[in-house]
Image (tube, rainbow, N blue to C red; front, side, top):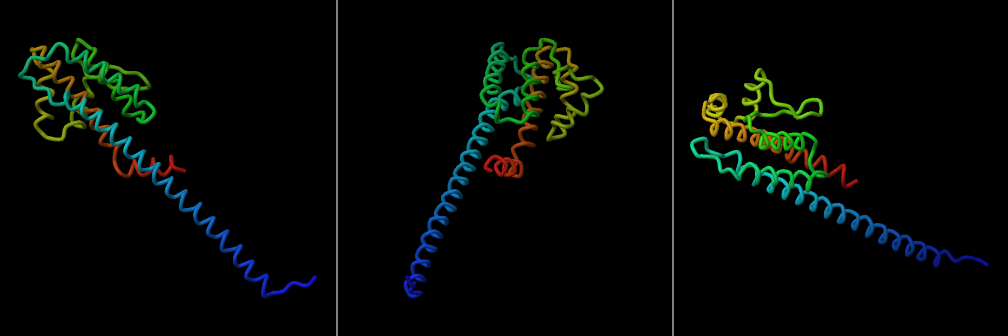
Length: 192
């Protein structure tokens, strides 16, 4: 049985073209799926960020000159706890720790600020307070007014300022984490 090169070459070319077309479709489909997953992850992160910021901003803009609504702390504490557990798998350890500190602050009747050290939520040491306030302050006014308000004889002023400081600390962590660079890095490693 002899083989005719005029017949075999077109058959091989046809088969190679078919295989190439099939694999290119698979390749482009995998790219499409990967992009879809990345888009969904980004959407989820921005939704989480928006939801957290909406709650935190209510606390970060409290005014010392107004009486604190007695239902604010328990309501916010419950909402923060709900967000914490709802998005636990999506949030980095630093933000979860900051949310725990905020929860402790909202529960504390001594108007203290909390930090997380060695896996424990503890009241901040007086020697660390100035650096803490500096780290969460975007404007100079707050750097100077917060320490004064935290030492005020008025309990309402101390309470509101401690809550504001703690909420701003969480917002700072959110801003540090939810950068395009961090999200892109995370997506590349999740999408693989």
